[in-house]
Figure 1 (cartoon, rainbow, N blue to C red):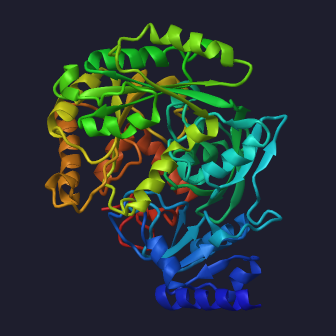
Figure 2 (cartoon, helix red, strand yellow):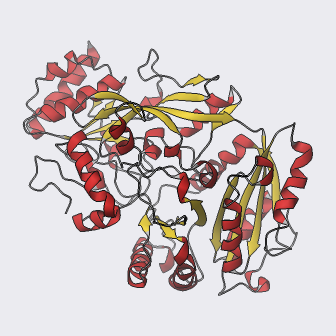
Figure 3 (spheres, rainbow, N blue to C red):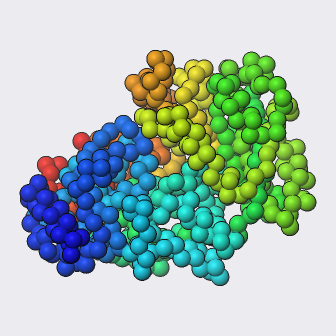
Length: 530
């Protein structure tokens, strides 16, 4: 009864604030078992994200106990005369306020205030060992998905570098890491979804049923529905990982080797690496920060001593999975692959570790940054898909040009095979067989040094985008952030018409994920973000 009273009070607050014309008891009759919170701490948490670049306070925060709770709330918004918006928030790792809203309710999909509700409210991860898939709540973090599947000797095929992200969050974008060249992004490894549409309908969708919704939601930036359940494909999990980093001073050699390695995706496991990534090094301190984790030369690495091209080095990062049955052959397999690469021969860094420790490697870095107060800072990240044909031009103009010889965070670069992406989904990529992710993952720090401050880094991002535009490099933003209709139409290109029609079908009042700034709710003056 206390929960119903608090919920009724919260809904009354919405009535006063936005003129909600739904009887407060109507939501209760929908069977809402969660909590619609006005707690200042909940509202504050929902108003921020990892980017720390924007702030928008919602009217309330829903901690759902079931998918039906979410459907009830969205249906109330849809049927309301005056209307309010609904945004789903996972672990809050967005950069530009994509999961925020100022005119409605944020649904806190992850965490549930540390409580786990059973009996499907929300459901605990359920592994189907024989069928090799797992059903998970949309707010489940990937680290918990991994822990659940490892109990059965299984694991998802495709990952993100950071595991403390929600399933629904990454599937609404794509979900990529070094396995994508082989298995495709995470959205290419989903069998089925339960989705709450912008009309408040709770639907199961897959390639066999409600196909258009299934394809729309995957990579759909939250515009067509809220993922409440995902059925994820699994494979046998390896026990250990051989983790290798090698250095290049020549960009052409670096990209040639990366592209060769991802071309092996159809080869047997013994004849390819399981993970291919890389990063750009414009500051030698970045190398020596991670040297201690690897068996490596004793002397510190000096960029100047390696004849770096334009003062920049490139690191190829690769792994080989193995277990007890293949441990005897892993050295031979690795050596055979490395012999075909053209890296600097004295720059091989290698280590062995448990599979789970490799996948969770970024979390260890997070804990170190948190201990130094360097985690909850602005993150003006820029993620781009760059076509293979122009990656050399990008290197010259950005890595050796705009960025200079200092950075304030990792710069990732690695290629992917376009044929591993399902282009019936909403995500967009460059129109070439191979394209690169380039991720400028910088942190704005108050050090007194101009190159670390937010304005400098944000302006640098704008310079990168302007350079690409002026040079005719047809990049696509990953985790895109635009503010005008023209920009979004250009981003989606030939897919814009389909994207718009899907919006009309599944969220006609533009209630969902307004923080993306693609569409304005139908109860405001304009339908498209300005």
